[in-house]
Image 1 (cartoon, helix red, strand yellow):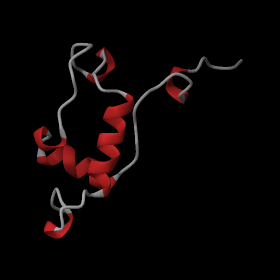
Image 2 (cartoon, rainbow, N blue to C red; image 1 turned 120 degrees about the vertical axis):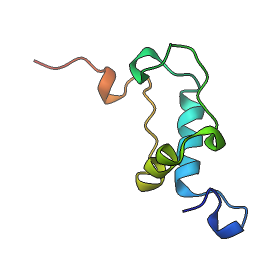
Image 3 (tube, rainbow, N blue to C red; image 1 turned 30 degrees about the vertical axis):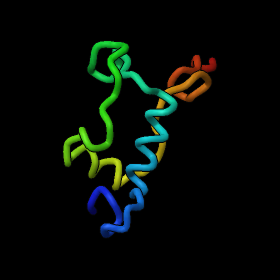
Length: 75
């Protein structure tokens, strides 16, 4: 799939999800394999493989307070 839907100027579901994800978590953190605080790439700067990953699973993935991966285990 191209970056824009068939030249219509509309954003793809993957691009919309990535941009929403970046709005929630604009910088990388050390769990992302980058130095914490580095701004995330724009959609156009992502590799084709990264864009394809977002197109295959167009869901927001940002970690934020209260997300499952930051909660303490019960027990």
